[in-house]
Amino acid sequence: MVTSFFTCTKTISSLAIAAVLTGGVAAPSLAAAPAAKQEIHEGTKKNKNGNAAVEAIAEQALSTVQVVATGYTAGYESTGKRPGHPQYGITYSGVKVRRGQVSTVAADTKLFPIGTLLYIPGYGYGVVADTGSAIKGHRLDLYFETIKDVYKQWGKRTVDVQVLRKGNGKLSQSWLNQINRAVEAGKPIPQTYLES
Amino acid sequence: MVTSFFTCTKTISSLAIAAVLTGGVAAPSLAAAPAAKQEIHEGTKKNKNGNAAVEAIAEQALSTVQVVATGYTAGYESTGKRPGHPQYGITYSGVKVRRGQVSTVAADTKLFPIGTLLYIPGYGYGVVADTGSAIKGHRLDLYFETIKDVYKQWGKRTVDVQVLRKGNGKLSQSWLNQINRAVEAGKPIPQTYLES
Image (tube, rainbow over all chains, first blue to last red; front, side, top):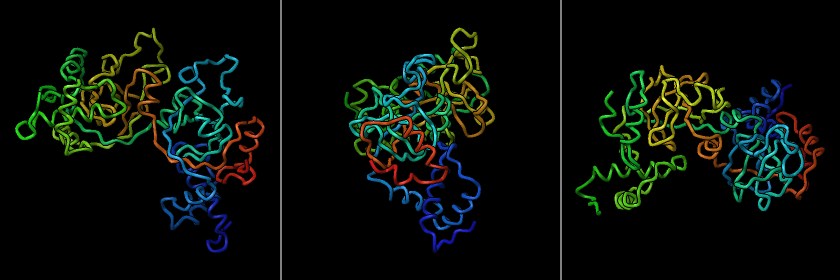
């Protein structure tokens, strides 16, 4: 199927959304079919950065709100409940946790009442279904199926690290203890530890 | 103690490093003593963004390398070992995992041999002590004591979310199932679901 750029802008906008949804590392479940991908390519030639897609979602939006978002799971580390607990995997709203086209997320219901539908860049669509003791104000907790998913799909940062000393392949407990004692709070690494 | 800005640049640089180390949300253990904080304030008046501090660390550095960093713990989700396992909490190098002034981190030893000392923005000093099956090339795994620490200290993003529908305080399993079926891969939210 070939979609004309001139006569089918609406379709192109919709498909451009797919580019955003499938482009993020955090939304593997939102993969578009190959045919749709081709159309996205056709339709977004002039929008390499997906600006058209972002605009298309913004067109649907009532407002944009900046929040700090973390990930969570149904597991003990996040909910204090283990599999077998009668409320395991059940959100505050009563629905089961879900990672899908529209996932369940936790919010402060004073800001986002239960049932609020959000688009979260890098995650996808989320519906407010849950709450959390630390989720107050401009905070969101995004549901993931496993702890590893949180680490890999949300807890990832690109950083420029400084290499202060190249290792020689060995590390001893006494050296590690020493350097930890030597580097006092607010002090740089003593020069003697930087010599390989 | 008063430190002159003109006669004690070295001291100021060192203390400016403290500003970076204690400024990051991810390094609560690196808090400087109140007296040192005062000096940082004196010394960095003209460097509100901590540029001097970053430069001071860079002065110590052999090189700067861009990496993608995730967090991990000694626990089952990251290592497959539970407390009680003879190798629980022991890194590839043989030293115990540590979150301190200098923490243990995992890297690809072809790029960063064991014993390599790094400064990781938002985390602090890290020494390469561990490896991981997914930690190949320009990847780092940063040790944290708990899963919650990974979530809160590393897995946090500031995002602009789009509010597509304001919830009415209720959410039913059937509506969540319906919307998940209705929102096909690569399609926008149908209008009917956006009406509260």
